[in-house]
Length: 240
Image (cartoon, rainbow, N blue to C red):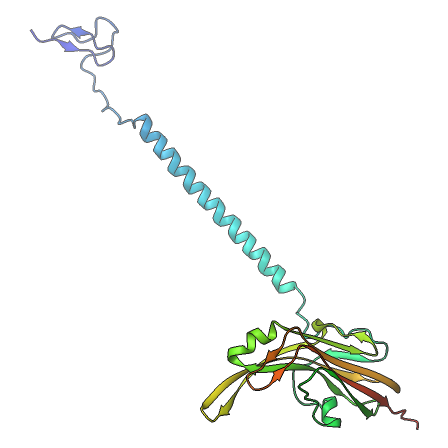
């Protein structure tokens, strides 16, 4: 004889019974279908995915916030100065300059190129409003340029005060020198500035190239030592 299973308590009842003899539940009542319940491992996986999504959303919000903040800070920052303030040389003013529009001291006195260590002196007369380009550099054949530059120290003084290289404008250039066997590229490195204000009186400007070793630039040999150009400057008084 078949029995009827109570959907509530699971006990067996006789056929024809309308109610469960154990819990009283109607045996012919419609029961709802069982709901599918995820397993514990599935719940853990779902929780991890939700955590990852939340973290990504929070990270995106923070990134957008920081990007906006830095963009506003960049927009509000002051513009970069093209030149540093001139160094303090009393009434003499020097600014970095990397052009060729103004004369240099050698332009007043002739060539200053020498191939032996020593001091070369010249007399120069200027007006108070004379703008003069100062500085020097070195050119060498490409194959020896780097080695040359590692063994040359540049220094400059004005009225016996050192002019820092950082206060001059660095420059680089290249050209081709023709030889009987062909052409060779040459590289140049320079340091330049402008003196834009001269008080009347006597001044002294020097530019020194110290060779730490004997140097060959691809054309000439230069023994180790100091090569100095000294310019004794007389600035005229406009009232004279």
